[in-house]
Amino acid sequence: MAVPGRRNGLMEDDENEDENALFEEDLVELESNTPPHLRALAAASEVGDVDALRLALDNLEGSIDQPVEDGDTALHLCCLYGHLSCVQLLLERGANLEAKDEDGAIPLHDACAGGYSEIVQLLINRAINAECVKRMLESVDAEGDTPLHHAARGEHPDIIRLLMASGASLTKANLYGKIPSELPDPGTEARRILEAATSAVHNQ
Image 1 (spheres, helix red, strand yellow):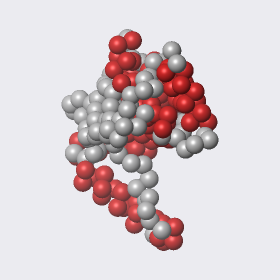
Image 2 (cartoon, one colour):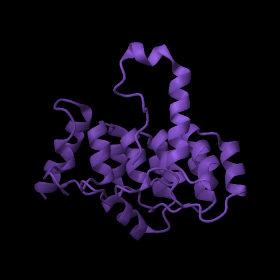
Image 3 (tube, rainbow, N blue to C red):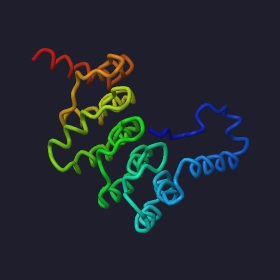
């Protein structure tokens, strides 16, 4: 999974010092990690420019599901950065809901981590059948995290409720033995929702 905000870790003074240099570094990084024929697709996906994305797709040679950056497909990037209209376009063009990045995450993982409830709902709605929804909800990344783990860690109550209503498992542990209810900070709404639901499952 690519990480939004490459400037994390920079001191505030450094960030303000030369934004042009940082922008140039981002472009160099994008170009070095992305095959030349996919750079327009990757750039449009990152910034959420739906017109540029449409043009890139119209001129695309090969599959819409090709990794464009760090193993992420265009759909991964649009979900990661929260670009709803771009996600809609990619799904209309046939992007694979279950494509995995280099960490084993599917686009739903990225949307849940970012807290983009409309995108999460769209991805679930676009699944072809109940079995596809089940596979997406149970999909795990390299650390054994399901989409619900990501929503729990990010403390996104709306997405947690949505995933639970869609059938997400409350008791599946990741590679560190953590179930979703153990990930939000104590006292948060996300923690309360998950603990109550998990307790109800255990009491059934």
